[in-house]
Each structure stands twice: as structure tokens, then as C-alpha cells.
Image (cartoon, rainbow, N blue to C red; front, top):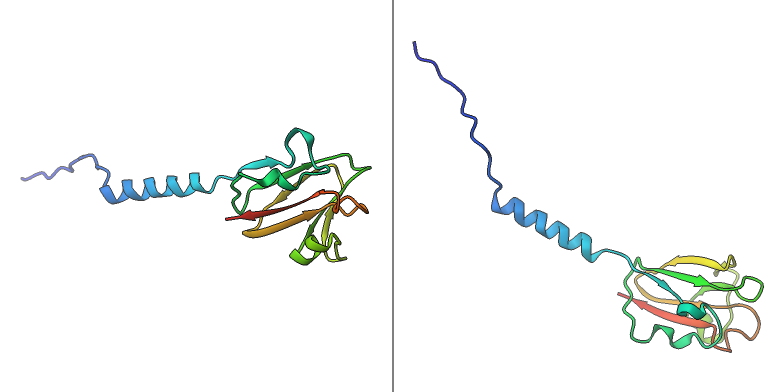
Length: 129
């Protein structure tokens, strides 16, 4: 009588599986978002326009706008509104003083709608890749 037993050989990882895992880790780490505090320690205030210089932004990154809500607000506007310093009724406006906004791919525009503030430099444009 012949008795057949089962082999308990261990599986070894296939190179393709290891490659896919490696690729997945690269994609996940590349998609990490970064949080930026607009204006650094000064916050969202006058002459913040050049704060973006030298920074790299990606879609999904978060901008934190810190400011005194009795003095400023933040409106997400389009290019024409940014240039004219006037937000439309369709513009999303924040006023908590600790606002967090996720960047969309492409150009993102933000202004303060308090009269005279945008023209005084309380505005930024951010290009997110």
C-alpha cells in the first residue's frame, strides 16, 4: 500500500510580486500631502504675495490660513477675480482665522475680501502640480 503525503514546501516571493509592492510604496509616498502655513509665522496678512516663491506645491497639499478673523478672511477666487481683487457671490469664503484649504491641480487663487486688503497684498496664487 502506497501512502502519498503532502509536501509542506514554503512559498518564495515571486519577483513580480516584490516589484508591485515596491511600485505601490513609491506611489503612496509620492502622493503624501504637505501642509503649508501661508505667510509662515506672520500668517495671512499684508504683503504675503511673495510667500509662495521657491515653494513646490502638489494637488492635495493643504494651505493653512492663520489670521485674526475680525481683520481678514480668505476667498477662493478665479484668475479674473484675483486680478481685480473682487470675489463673486460664487466664491467660497472662509472666516474662522484657522482655515485649511486643499489645493486643486493647476492654479489656485486666494484673496482677502476686506476692502483694500487684496490691493494691499493679502492675496496669493499657487500653482499645484
